[in-house]
Length: 513
Picture 1 (cartoon, helix red, strand yellow):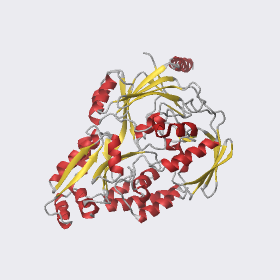
Picture 2: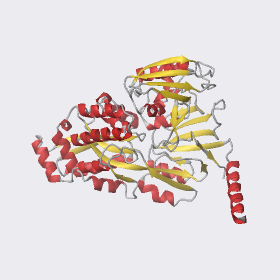
Picture 3: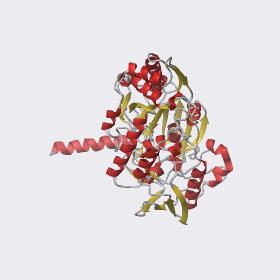
Picture 4: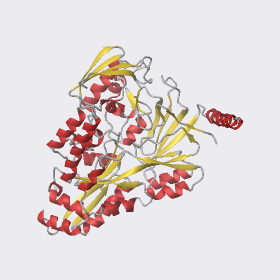
């Protein structure tokens, strides 16, 4: 008994010592390979922008850092009608916007929710609130959102930073420049943004919630991921966003830092153009499927096991993942690929253009595809672009093929709807211009029921049709691999690859030793 008591005292002493270091003067440097493109919630289309905006802006509800539970944030409670079309939210009182040029830090109200949602619907290139019919102010702290049709994953939609609440005065006062002058209700205030170099945030001392330990946050933009790993090992950054498979062993062997790995909710693929060019011919698309040894491709990119082959768009981290989808995979058969090209009218082969961002894994995948497809008569020309240009080219359908990376929430809606619904043509998600009325039908059915087993069935059917159309060649699912300095405490690696420094249950701090 005495040993148990002494052990308990020792554990408590260690906890007390640890928390004693959790002071309010912590600073942290986060290394990331992608530059944000905007700080306007309505306009973003990329993870890099969403990640930094979470410091400034807040949503009605939010996921915890492990992305397992939706928590109240600017809303304290809500009710939904039986038909899933009417959602009524009670807002948190005493929440104030950060001081800006056009308002002095006034209180957030239901009118701000209406303005923010109406603005998002009108301006967003992603149209994330496409299911919203109207937003009505019922009182200073009460808002009713009416949907066009029953939509089961609506709360998940509201966790996205695209549904953040912004002050009208700042958004309209700055106009387009609001993208560089963010103002929200969040725990941090942007201090500086030097494009292609760094971005800094300072703590919002008037924040309504629990005080963040971090006083200062710096995001250091380092486009080369190998250099990013070196920055971690030398102490230049405290957290790295995405360690390459090849760098895992040397980071693990470096004193003072550690590697954190967990399964991710993501998928990477080669998306083919359905609107124009040779890939509108299904035989050409099938030739590409037969002409690449996908197993070898994945093994070459991830020799240390931080990636696995993908067979469909819904990742294993989703509760709707269907392991049987691999039955629809085509085998590696170069002879079959050559025959299909001949039948498609290309007996002497053809040239296609594939686009990638700066991500070395996707660039490597394109190079391997290029080498393999050359053997069957397809000359694959590779163009790598910085992120903003890449999104612009691919969302407009100007690529024969592009390597898409998609990571979001565990709900299958975020992988099927955003990449394959016909209404998403013209966005980065459906830059291939894919349209299939039956896929649209199953998506609508999946959206309109709360019965999870039925939703799984509908998304399974949609996924099967997509894979039979051969427009989307799955490449791999990545583990989320981050490097963390031992001085960083309270950090949880999120399966959606988002670096959350402050979230429900998470308040990161950095010790001085």
